[in-house]
Image (cartoon, rainbow, N blue to C red; front, side):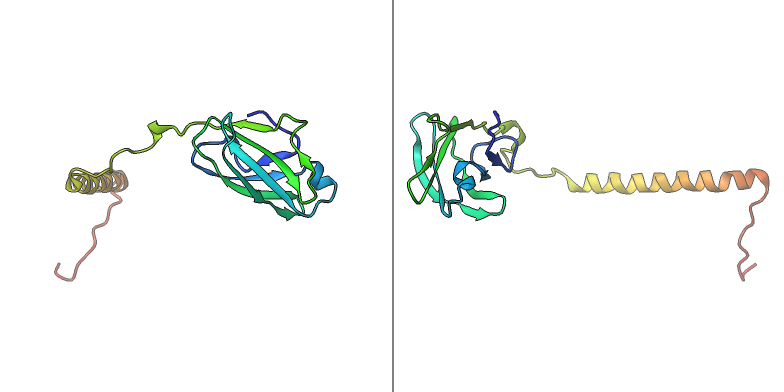
Length: 154
C-alpha cells in the first residue's frame, strides 16, 4: 500500500469485508475545520457511494468504514464550508486485498473420535510419570541410598 502523508489506517493492508479506522490530519484539519466528512466509494466508478461525518480528536479526524468487496477504496474529504481535500484532484485511492480463503475453514471441524485423543493423552502422562520415577529412584537404588518407608504393619 502506498503511503500518503496525512491519511492513516489502523491496519497495514486493507482486506475486503473488514472494518477499518481511518485517520486524517490533512489541510482541513490544519486549517481548523470543526466538521469534516469522509466522502467514499469503491471500484473505478465509485460504487456504494457514501459520506459520513468524522470524529474530531486531538490527533486528527477519525472514522470507521466497512470495506466492500471491490478492487479499490476511493475517498476524499470535505468540511461544512464546502472546502475539499481530494489529493490534488487525484482522490485518495487504495487497493483492497481479497480475503485469503485458504485460511478459512469451509466445513465445521469435528474430532472424529475424541476417546482416542483422551486415551493417548492418558498414556503420555503415564509414560512421563514412569520416566520421572526411573530417573529419580534408579540412581538411589544403584548407590544404596534408597530407604523404604516403614509402615505400621512391619
